[in-house]
Image (cartoon, rainbow, N blue to C red; front, side):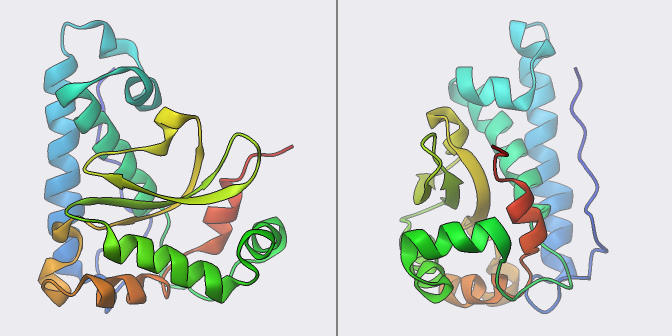
Length: 194
């Protein structure tokens, strides 16, 4: 199977001022594409050729894992946002957040702190665990919670290329802005159905 760069679900300039069109051109059009192209090159002639990204994330190591996971992580990340996003979740997701953190504000603060404090490059994740609870986890580099059997719901990319053109090294400013473009319907739709 040959992987291709999925199109963005919005126009290149739709997330401004939180994420500029220039950042999306580089982040999606160059970085994300590079992971996909490298993965296609790496799996040629291997048993991974017929696997899904999820299968590779769970079983591969080294360069194949890194590129498969980064391809998946970026697709997941970009699909989380909408120019009409923001606000707070509702329904089952809001109930689960309130059960775990008391209220949305507490959750948002803890998630933001996790994203800002992650050393180096990586991802902050909200996941649904195997026992149906919610957790915030930090993953370095290409880390992905699928490897631990978690269901990813939300992620913030804290690799510098995700925000440097817009806010330079002010990661906290970027994280603060991302809350204004989250499509909570997309996030809630990722929860497992019981």
